[in-house]
Length: 305
Ligand SMILES: [Fe+2]
Ligand SMILES: [Fe+2]
Image (cartoon, rainbow, N blue to C red; front, side, top):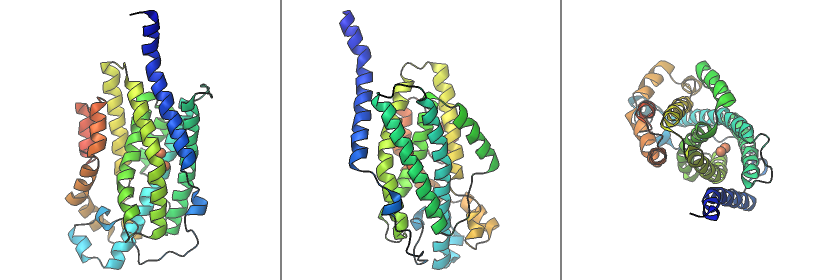
């Protein structure tokens, strides 16, 4: 092999990465939203609507769900939607800090650098949109449990490379599969559908970048590093997925929290919804070599596999 050929081989992944970042920048220029203008914030909340597709409720399919009035069911899914949005804000803040740290003092002429800042700007708008959405749904501040908040604080401060980007991907994909259903569902409040629609469109670019970065950072990673980061990503995913719906939603929807929590924890329907919608994501993690035995244990506990 000549030295020119060696050089060419090394430059190829770099060119691919530039091409992806340029395409994402173009796409973002062609199709991005300003939620302040696009979402109907002014029309008062119509309680005749759900907050999520009912099938995504943590109680759907349980005896408790059967006993609830349609009003109670709608009140519950509205609180659940607000909780998912609030968890989204929590994770988007982690994500923004990780991406900002990752690109600190790097080359600003690199398309990936400019894309990273574009993504952070998207997430910043998303978090404000989710905050206003949860408020309009009449929900209090939902936050993950204390331990998870502190683990998140550590993770956003130290996570780098594939650990950061694969965790970003999992959070974005899990949210994406739910929001794709909700944005099309006429039983869901129109302003919530708009929020979901904006998020799904803008996140599809983020997920492409996260997949690309995960693959790129893992290239050449040895066995110990892959094992370790696979486990870190799986634990992060477990924390994210189990924090999606706060246990406080039940009392805020006027239900008996003890019974609701008990039946939600045993709800096989909800688990199978999660599992079937995460099949594509698990396929990607498998192809990236991140589904190690230890990691799989956590994905199973989070009902993603
Ligand atoms: Fe987002
Ligand atoms: Fe994102």
